[in-house]
Amino acid sequence: MAERGQTKFQIDLRRHLREQAVDRNLTRLITEIAEASKYIINSIRTGDLGVAGTSNLYGEQQLALDVLADRILEKRLKYSGVVASLVSEESGDILRFHPEQEGPYYSVAYDPLDGSSLVDVNLAVGTIVSIYAGDNLLQPGRQQVAALYILYGPRTTLMYSTGNGVHEFAMNQLMEYSLVQEHVRIDGGSGIYSPGGQRNLYTPGTEAFVRSLEERGYKLRYSGGFVPDINQVMIKGKGVFLYPHLQNRPRGKLRLLYELNPMAFLVEQAGGAASDGHRPILDLVPQKIDDCAPVFIGCREDVAAAEACIAAQG
Ligand SMILES: O=P(O)(O)OC[C@H]1O[C@](O)(COP(=O)(O)O)[C@@H](O)[C@@H]1O
Ligand SMILES: [Mg+2]
Ligand SMILES: [Mg+2]
Image (tube, rainbow, N blue to C red; front, side):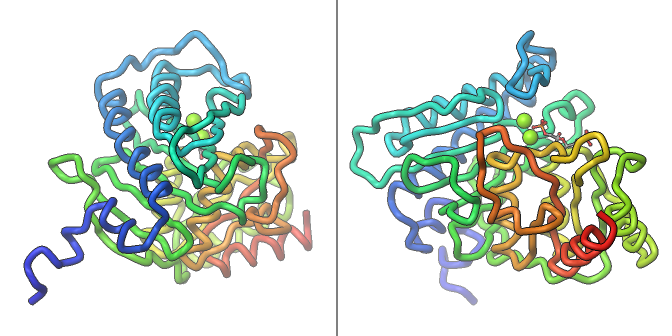
């Protein structure tokens, strides 16, 4: 019987970060983001589901919730005292700060509310965060020092890594994130597949890859939310998500800085892989903050099979 107060399941996020010997300022940053999620949850549950009357960098109509979630996170990060620069999917400009606190400082790229168009149909949405040391946000994803996502589903869960495995937390009745499991692993096996985009616009290589999964009995699981769809692969420990290059969209849809890099960091830390069809997502060098890339992400063997199909048929 574990000593009272010592069981793994009473470890909250801050204590876990401390036990992982995570730098004090990075611990502060991650716990500030966790705090901000409480206000985002509240805005999802009670907020205005209408449009904000503005559009983001991609010309996508912003929902009031996108803008509200962005404001909540930006304010938290700005006043955290440990952030040198940040960029959000919703704002599109890099904001720079001069923290008074002692360094080290960090830079953050985030998608404040991914899948926001699913809120009005009451499907799960999430927040995705990518963290670098210093003030340069245009670095390959492999340079990240941490990444995390928060999934606002029937339960609110948080998945983070600082490079020492991926750990899952769930929000309890007191709105604290309490440890559920450490070292989440994607070990493979016949699983699920999440085929994003329009199938009729797939290239021959992607079409051949998806057909091979169906012939192997993979089950289609696609919610239209990147965070729940990736979380399903993480928790099941198998399967693959793809939002590929399309005939009319050669760079796919998902954004490198705030969606692909953080998810690729987490999935690789869980023993999986993430590719743009030719090379690891984490090795792509961002040219500009709104770069997009095709993505095949999940079980290592499935991603390798996708790359082989694309090498053979494009
Ligand atoms: O609706 P589509 O084209 O299948 O795209 C779904 C993808 O787009 C997204 O909704 C884009 O996210 P945003 O809501 O942040 O723009 C992802 O969550 C999801 O994986
Ligand atoms: Mg998004
Ligand atoms: Mg978004």
